[in-house]
Image (cartoon, rainbow, N blue to C red; front, side, top):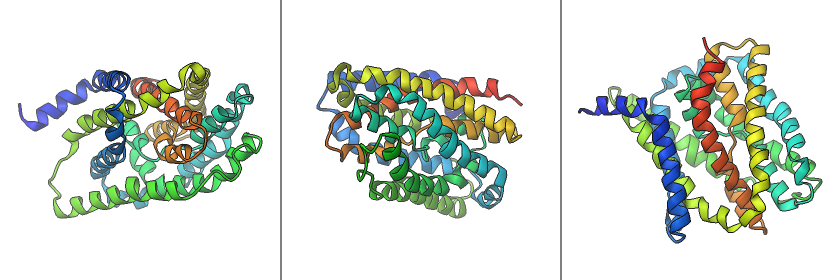
Length: 311
């Protein structure tokens, strides 16, 4: 079997493969508490590699045209920074008596994803090139919004805890460098095809993230169980909000799918360094719990959303 046929076979079975990667990661993280330490160091490089392959599959010369779609960009910003905060505020009210869990949930739910959302959107037939074009704008917008929204919705609990450093680092390492590398490869090796690596890299990312963070979640005990319905509810409501906003804005199907994924997918891997810098271990555990819930939800959404937003 040549590489192209192997890639096609992996594409046909990608959903069960992703679920298997998550299951193995959970088992390793639970059974071998010492293993996740080195794996945590591999999280960012594996995501960067995945995004490099994703960016390489997009005609980067078309990014300029994507940025000219003002209706999509305005709808994207409105959903992520006006509609989503209202959903988050309503869902997190039961956490008001647990400040650490509240801050962790707000930190992750208020930040739109800038990395693997592009991959999931591409898998579902979304206009991932438009999300790619909007990535720097989303990053800068949340850099400005989080220091305001998190303290506001937490009643001042998180005031002074939000720093710009981790966001800027993620923008450079996870977006700008892979984007530059992809552009160079497209120019220097125009016939190079990296698409067969997409599914294996996604499996590696899912395995690495889940395996490295499972001990942190287990160490928090049952305190995190209250977050599961909050995060699951967010996935449902944010998906519904994205679909409704796309229809109101009369977006074409690929753009509607991309918008919906952006609404439902959060920036957990980028805000995790912020959470780890906070004094309570429950804050990063709350962020990681969202990662686990979201990854399972995204695997399902890749299959469901094309049916909800069909051509």
